[in-house]
Image (tube, rainbow, N blue to C red; front, side, top):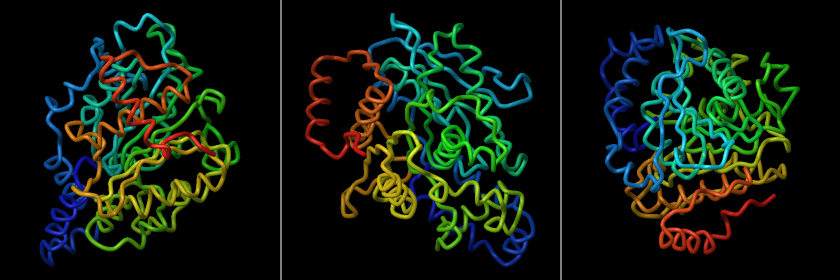
Amino acid sequence: MKLSSHTAAGLLAGVAAAGISAAVALGRHPLPSTWLIRGVFAGAGKVPVKKILPHIPRFTVTGHRGLHYLGSAAKPTLDLFLPENAARKPLPVVMWIHGGAWISGSTEDVAPYLKVLAGYGYAVLGVGYSISPEAVYPAALKELNAALGFVREHADRYGLDPDRIVLAGDSAGAQLAAQLALAITNPEYARDTGAVPAAGPEQLCGILLHCGVFNLESVARMAGPVGWGLRKALWAYTGSKDWAATEAADHMCIPKHVDHRFPPTYISGGNGDNLTLTQSVPLADRLQDLGVPVVRRFWPKNYRPALGHEYQFQLHRPEAMESLHETVAFLEQVTGVTALPRNPLEERAARRRLDAQPDIRLSA
């Protein structure tokens, strides 16, 4: 989802109040709802690229766009961003899964941010996947697992380290990343879901989860237009109007399946995003209770200005830059590879901010 919660709520409320005939159409098939929700995501909240690119460190980033990781030109593709001047090889890999409520979004949406991460000295993949209702669960998960195979098969060509992988995702992409991490680290879960992971638990260093949807049981009870939109999206994604009773919904409910084997986690959400208190904070609490190392980045409820859904991409804002610096520090810790040096003044300032935030250190 590439928009603020307030924007989404306002637009979806307008959709929900469109009239009796529209309501009838929306109740018969997920496709009309999907079109409406896609329109909301496509038209709101996009950050101009010019506000992100100035934050790329001083190293050149090379992009390999539209790589066919599924072996067919008709399938989704992935983008790979590499720091051109990084003498050290192979590079740890950050595999990012875009959001869009499982029914929209593309690698193009997150590409500017991924260039920023690559500029710190990491190989960053933006992975496209088939969206719904054209494809239903578990098609996207199988495709994303295949992207892990791409990392292994093309490691030598691009200078990638297949033994140091960090999964990442925003919004629905965070749910997909978490589910893929479960399949990698939990053999029982992989067996129950029919997944054959393309990477082993020893290769998965950590996971970045931004503004995600994790607990589908709470989504079923969520009030308001955002809850309405998510339920329509899940109808499309699972292929069932009674999506909450499906096996897919059980598999997707991350808190039900996590255990101590889940990888070290960076998890964040804005205080103006109504998914934060119902989704991200409870998952962070659950992981910490299990003894999983967790780095949390949340803001007080009364923090102003309120930070909406996908706040982390708004790099012209100081809060997003704080999250970026913490993300890079997390990558350094879990991969054991220090980020490329930045401007010394910026580096010292970033370190001072991190040292002043004891809650962002990895802690069991």
